[in-house]
Image (cartoon, rainbow, N blue to C red; front, side, top):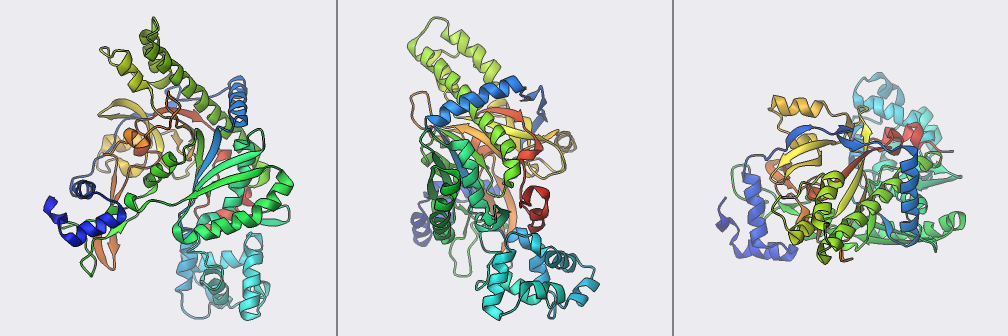
Length: 513
C-alpha cells in the first residue's frame, strides 16, 4: 500500500477533522492489505489448566475483599451501550417486507421464517414488557386497540407502530433503551436493570454507585432523560443514589475502509470512508474513566430480579479476585523498587504461580517491575452450552504463551488443526469480567500500551452496493487486553442472560411479574 495514497490535501483534512494522524491511517491501510493474521491456538483453557474453580470458602473470602473495596468507593461498572437493536428484530423487519396488509390468516398460512416470526410475535405480545407502550402508541396514532389487532388482524399496523420513527422506533433504538422486563408493576429498560444491579455491585459506604456508560451521540439525550426520570423512583425503593458518566466513542477510533482492489475506499464524492471499529474502540473510554476496580458486561446481559442474587454474587467475587491480585502485583512492585533482599526471586515465583508469566532469567529488579506492573482482568467463563461467544485458549504469540479470549473469526478457517482445537473448547466467554486499571504508583495505566495491535479482524462489507474491506480494532476483551494479567474463573450459566433476538425476552430469565 503506497503511503502517497493519503497525501491529498482533502484526505489530510478529513483525517485531521477526526483526529487521526496520517501515519495511523497508513498503518490501517497496510493492515487491510495484508493477509489475515490468525491467532495461534495451543490448546483450550480447561478447569485446572487455565480456568480455576472457586470453592465456597474461597468465594466467601473474595466477597469480603469486594465488600471492603466497594465501601471505599473503588468499585464501578462499565457498560457498553451504544449498539443499536436492529439485529434483535431481523425476522420482524423481514416480515415488514411481506406484501399486503398482513391479514392474520394469510400470514399463518405461510411457512417462511418471517411469517412464522410475525405470528409468534403477535401471539406472545402480552408477555413483552413493551406491550403497554406499543398499545399506547397505537391508540394515539390510529385509535386502534393492540389486543384486538393481535387477535383479528391485520398485523401491518402493529409492525408500523413498532418500527416507525413516529412509533417506538424499535429497530433504531439502542438496546439499553428498550423495555426488557416487567417488575414490581413497572416496565424496565436494560439500562435501568444495570442501575439496579449496581446496588449490589458498586455501592460505597454512603450508598453511591458509579457507572460509566458508553452511548452513541444520537441517543445520549435519551439515556440522560431516562436516568433523570427513573433514578428518583428507583432510589425511593432501593435507597442511595447513582453517579453515572456517559461517554461516546471517539471519532479518532474509527478506521478507514479499503477498496479490495487496493488503496482506500472512496465514496461517490471521492471522499475517504470511515467506519466504527468495533468494541475495541471503547478501550479509550475505559481508560479515560479514571476508575480503579471496574466490572464489565454487555448491556443486554441482564435478568429479572429473582435471578439477580447469583449474578451479584459472582460479579462481586471476580472484583474481589481482581482487587486481591492487583494488590499483590503492587506489593511486589514496591518490594522490587525498594531493593528488598529476595524480592527478585519472590517476584519471579509470584509471577509464574499467580500470573502465568515467566520473567526472563536475565531480568533485573527494574525490568521485572516493568513486566509485572500491568492491568489485571479476571474473566468469568461458562461451560459450553451451545451459546455463541468467544472462548478461553492458551495462545502463542510474540510475547510467548498466554491465556487469551479468542473469537472464532480470529482462527484460520482452513487450518484443520486450529479448527480442531477451537472445537475442543469446554467453556465460552460471556463477557463477565472484573478489571483493575491502576498501576503500582496509584495512577491509571496507559491501556494502549498493552494492546496486541496485530489482533485485528478484516471483514468484507458493502457501501451502496460496492464491496469494501472493513477493519475492526483488537476487541475490547480480546486483543485490546492481550497484554494484561489474566485469570479465568468458571462461573455458572445463570450469569449469562443475553438478548440477541426479541424472542429471547420470552425466556424465563426475562419474564418477571
